[in-house]
Image (tube, rainbow, N blue to C red; front, side):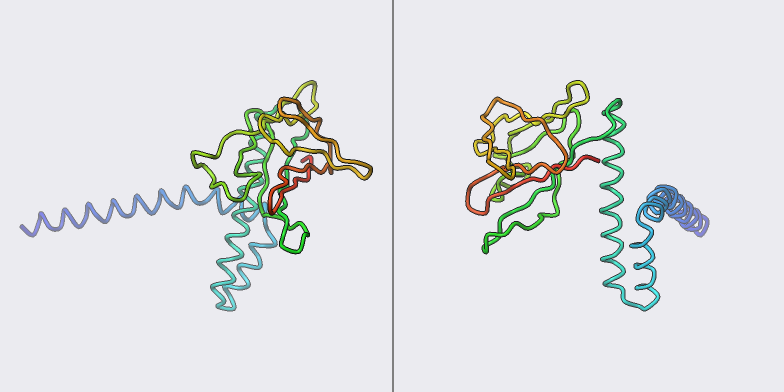
Amino acid sequence: MKRIIESIVCFHFWTILLICVSICILLFPVLLALYRLETNITIEAYKALRARNYKNAFIFLIEATKKSIEKIRIAYVKTRVGKTKQIPVLYLYSQTHSGDYKYDNEKVIGGFGQILRLSHIDREIICNSNQDTCVGRFENQSNIWYLVNDGINDLALLSKRAETKIAVGNKIKLMDEQKLVLSRRRYSKIAIVKFI
C-alpha cells in the first residue's frame, strides 16, 4: 500500500513538473515579445512591482500585452498581404453627449478577408451576435486599398470642402488620414484611416 501511494505521489510530481515546464516554454516567447515590443511599459510595470503597487503593475502588464498583440496582429496581416507595403487601419471614434468625438480604443485592421461588421459602426449591436453582419470589406487592386460598402447606409467621405456620400455597392479608395462617416444615428461613429 505504501508503495502505491509513493508511486501516485511521484506520478503527480512529474505531471505537475511537466505542466510547469510546458507553461514556461509557452510563456517565454510572449514575455520576450512583451519586453521587445513594449519595453517602456514593461519597465513601468517592473517599477510598480518594486514599489509593491500591484494594481498599477497589473494594469501596465495588461496594456503592454494589448499593444504587443496588436503589433503581432498587424505583422501577421502584413505577411498575409504580401506584396503591398502598407495596410489600412480604421481607428473608430464615437460621438459623446457634448458632440465631440472620442477614440473608442477600437480599430479595424484591413487586409485580405478582413471585414467591417455592424458592431463596428453601431454601438447598440453586440459583437458576434446574430445581428452583427458584414457591412463592408477591404479590397486591394494594384496595391491600392478600397473599402467596399456592402451595407453602410450612412457611409460618407469627409473632407475640408464637402462630404461625399458612398452608396451601398460602391467602393472608396482609402488614403492616409482620411475621415469616414460610418453612422449618423444617435452617438454617430467616424473612422480615421491610417496606413501602417
